[in-house]
Image (tube, rainbow, N blue to C red; front, side, top):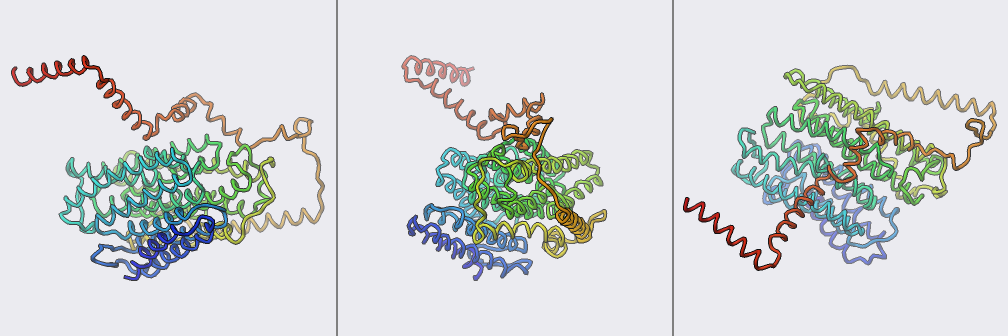
Length: 591
């Protein structure tokens, strides 16, 4: 009962109270969100050691150690973003904090739901809150697109859960286990999988994420598409493939295909972006591909890697978006061409962004490398079952990591290490409100990466059993060598400073470098946009050919146009349809 109060009741009540606080007290109103986040965090901590627990049978709220861990992360992410928002955003309305608190409650409800009604209500509230948060910021078109895509997938989820309950002969989601042996079971599986893919952002149901990332307020992006939505979507996919269905080779093949396409296609789209936030949005999509591939391997180490990558991605992706918020608020732009030389102005942001960028790129010994390494192992182990496509999946995963690193090298160079642009200011980070998230999140990337056996592995092994991996990997030793290398570099730098140095003008080809000759770091990557095949693909993407929202909208408008043509208000047209219909009826019944 105590976890029910902490994770459900307190956020609901405080969110409702936030509606009555005037907008001029926006920052003080954020205290409600801080208390709600802390309550959710404490609620998860209280039940975390338990492998299984029951909250309240009348509400059918149950959970396991993974549920408790995700509730804890929801509270932690909520607290960091709420604190960041208080110092980062100067004005707003109590409606935002109302939505924020209810989001925390609904997310905890999804992780703890055992009754299909509780799951549907909680899941639906998270989608509605997402759209309303975007609408509340004035981005009506993106809010509508998000609402239709996510809401449409929610409709499929309703049908899927209804079919699941009927097949399981009960309302408890913990008592369901059906095989993919019939057309009906495949339809249920597909409906639920689409709901999970859309929430997490897997292709082809991803297009709301880059648009939201570019235009929605940073706190909205950081708490939803960057972190909590990923936890919700992949958690649902985990329940689908591990708890509710007996997955066949065909089901695994579908997930591996979706994962591989998501990894490669999204990272290529990211390479071509010139807006920092939209670029990060495509990487938020690309990383989902690794999670889906991990779950699709059907192996213990692969599934463990997918779940670990879900946690890792939420950590460093939230850190990256919060860093981009600091950059945008200080410079007034997210265009990479207009940034540069921010290393000295924002040292904490630079360090935080660089660590998170290396983590998402799979650079050892950070957390992103550990989960990707486990996914690679899982893919390789599928070859034991005679899977002939494992090489394609492995190449896709490794190649995606390489392109991710290239993409983030572009950002670090263009924004921090390149030549200064006129967009920067001397104002530093907000130590009280912004810096905690910029320190805690990259620190988690380091700690999980170096000490996975003491952080995430115990959780995964309680969920999946012993995790066996091939190959040698000692993160502590690798971290020690890296620290030694950094120490040598610092020593060399210090000795060079002691010996003295001088500044001189910079010349290229005998000419002094002028601001007009400034290289932003983006130009090199424009080459890929002009290659024959990629140029055509990027052109198609710009026209919305791969956008599920645009495709469905075009389909609907086509039928609307057809119906308008059929019903044009002219009497002779209606007489014609009556005659045609009569001929068809006579032919059918009198032949």
